[in-house]
Image (tube, rainbow, N blue to C red; front, side, top):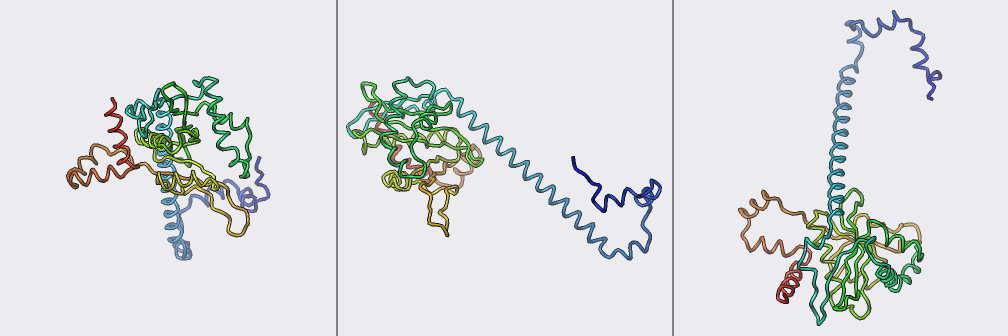
Length: 309
């Protein structure tokens, strides 16, 4: 309950009789009232400006709500896709550098216990030390819960004997009101490192982001993980995301992690495609397309897959 009785202005209004109150609110202003009220016009103009600002803010909130609703709908639609690899079918197979692998999609709840143990154990083997060197620390239970949450999605690379050799844990999600693909893990067993499979899995995530109209692919990496940092920033062309925390200027402490991302150019609408064809020669259009997310290498991969069919 809010009490008004101590407010002087309200208290004074209670002393007015109905007749006086009615007169004060309904009588027409006298000439002297207008002449003596030097700020009257300014007050009216100020009120109009405030009203305009209020409408602008309301419209902005309405637009932001509509944008969020659209972004959320895209994420929900992406999460309902039965098998996202159907969107990029040629990338179900990886045949390069003398190895032949198949890539399969799994939801966390569909993983067998054996496969769940494998993805967790590989992550622990590769990441525990980095976690312990940070202020996060490594906690088996919390990490396992994260990796088996309902929204957790997996791409797992399997050899000819269906043994797993690499995986990425990812999600279609919202971050700071933006729809995106978040890469939680990218892990490869020792024998298959530096053979291109990690790069291949990340490129699939980028293509899935494009196909599902996500605005970027995002990930978190420890600053002490120089191999991971070099891989993403040099080989995959990821950059520091605007949401990545900055180290305090006046304090000795610093953040042990950074957030990286790569923007995904939106699908052109039929109208923009038509306009582009009218204003740009085909070779320029091809160059623009090929510049997006290492598509030159993606095309090379695709050709190698098609040749093997």
